[in-house]
Image (cartoon, rainbow, N blue to C red; front, side, top):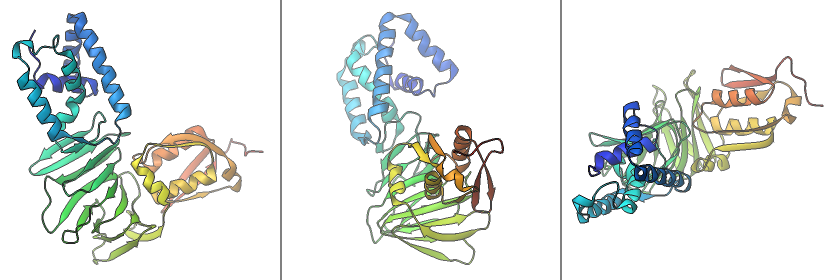
Length: 343
């Protein structure tokens, strides 16, 4: 049997992370069927992978140290013993960690399918729907990323400017450095800070993009041709209407903004009136109920910040007898004509 090399680990990682091609899946399955020991080992890897995915959310991993450790292990292991059948304890660890080690960024969160791609001095992180990731940039800034998000950042920041680009949703804890402002570029505007905490929601499918300030101060710029800027104070958020190209400032639900560091937002038995308020805080859109009796309608469900407001409303529509319409920057929710209001 041939020794395992990094190519094999990459293949195993893609298989466990469900990103392998059909041909690669067949290759792994053929190897599994060739030897009962292989099948047992693959089963153990699957369990390790699942445990890691469930328990290591937002755990920070120093990849450079782990990769060096892995290389030392490889050099210390005799090549004639470096097979799947031998040294299984070490290779179980290697396969479970492979997706981290191959990713190529200094700090990484253990969630399968995340992609970190180095491009000419830049790293690009791409997350799919429902995923979460935390990373620490070279200046010490912490970033919590939502699913359906792309973050592009330099391998090393300059001495007078720190700039990243994002499409999607993220929460930033910016390391203070008065000499080098931190700038977050979205498709609609740029957020300039020195040291602060804020949330950005800039998903392509939403009619607005939102920046919510939790701590410190930020300046919103580049959203119109006249060169206007908008300064935010803690507890406020800037809402940019993409259709009308206008910026407005409103108060924010800071608790909801902080929850972006955590899991999906779940509701159990919440009234439609309460839900409408929370959706307004999440998406920066005004939501009106067409009938006061709707306020007492109970809703139970779950969705993520990385879903557009339309998908969130579709979840509500599928579980409650309501319909919605959109006009300007307002969403109207009404009873379905065949539905009865609660007694």
